[in-house]
Amino acid sequence: MPIKIVKIVFACMLLTAANIHAQSTDVFKPAYIKATMLKVANWQLNNRNKAPLNSWTNAAFYTGVFAAYETTHANGLLDSMMAMGERYNWLTPARYDHADNIAIGQTYIDLYRIKKDRRMIQGTIDSVEKTKTVPGNEAKKHNGITWWWCDALFMAPPTFAKLANTLNDPSYLVLCDTLFRQCYQLLFNKEENLFARDATYLWDEKGEGKKEANGKKLFWSRGNGWVMAGLARLLEEMPKNYASRDFYITLFKQMSERLVSLQQADGLWRTSLLDPASYPGGEGSGSAFDCYALAWGINHKILDKDKYLPAVKKAWTGLQTLLTSDGKVGWVQPIGGDPRRNFNAESWEAYGSGAFLLAGSEVIKLKK
Image 1 (cartoon, rainbow, N blue to C red):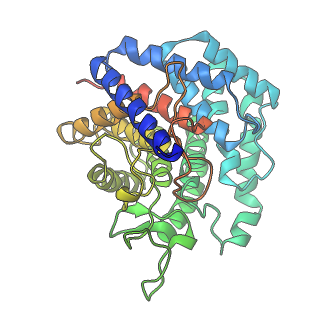
Image 2: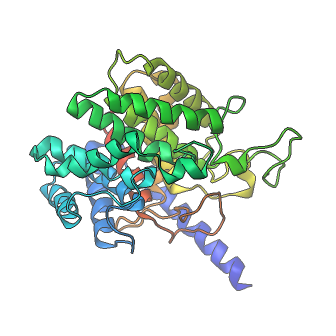
């Protein structure tokens, strides 16, 4: 038997075994969720990537670590986050106007709310203030649009909203609203209720553009997962009477309904949402972000429980099949700007672990 076929058969055997384990364990018991979250967090903390800990890949992870700390009250997680902040003097990376570089501010602000040490958020404040007043290179390079790719809507808006809430300064939300809507107007497809990754994925007037094997438009699972999770985290901080809140609620509901219709039988989403046949395996990070956002929507009474709870339960159960026994979240698509097939059970990224932790933090709150 050819080596490639042997590898495929072996991978299928592993996936089947993982499915059996997930089905035989009550993965919704709080004790199981907490233990699994700690296992995932600790594995990732002990298997760091080469990027700076305040970079976007790790910033997404630390949002999950903070959620895991709130869920488990494990002081080791708090200590790890504090050590990370101190290591970088609570600063964000240098490109102040790039959404990726402000993402770590979410965790800095969350920790500030516990410790009340102003230096923990001053660097984040300085970066956002500079975005307010100094024209940046991102807008210059992308026709005046600062948040020009959909992932940015997870990275930056929650940081802006957390600052607005923490400092009681609505100007941060006003700026966030402007930049978010620019991205929305450019990338949101109102027929599919999904976001294109960036302008290079938009079709022209002749109907020409990047397509999947089945001829459909290319909508990336993780990209839309970033948006969904970002919306949840933005709405979490946004005042109930904020003038634009209904816009974000409507968008969240539209995307939720569309994404549930694209969920596959195993509970997971494929890397390309409209061509699942070309991507037979579920992808960990996009699926976990979707699970988190949908569970958050139920818990905050934005989404109908009867309609969406089955999808969340399927997603959380499916995510368990991607875990190794020591807590690695596998089947995570590598860094890149499009769906790719070059990942497998051994593929991991810090943001995949972060997304899983966020999902667990909301699934545990569900009243089933």
